[in-house]
Image 1 (cartoon, rainbow, N blue to C red):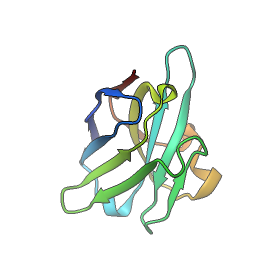
Image 2: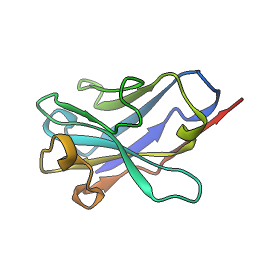
Image 3: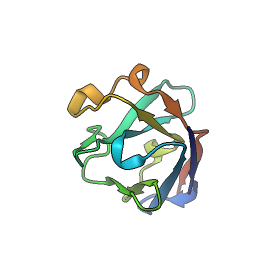
Image 4: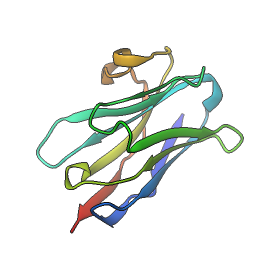
Length: 125
């Protein structure tokens, strides 16, 4: 299994970015996928998850601003990020897990089996 994250970059406060995570060696529609991020000097934290039933989960800090989705034909996961804030500056990682989850059950990083390499998002003024 390989996960290739892309789409990061430099964006101004209030702007938008869409991250992509191309999966190979697995079928996205049968997996539960997640996005995590690590800000400078901080621990990696949960951002969002999408299970195979289509149930979405979001961290409180991104609710209403970020949206997770997938294109199962392209086997690609997305994270649409709107109204970006300074605090969103991080390296963003996509990950997959075998066991399904919803809600806080998706937060545990140890339950994710495969990880992408990360893509840097920098929010500036």
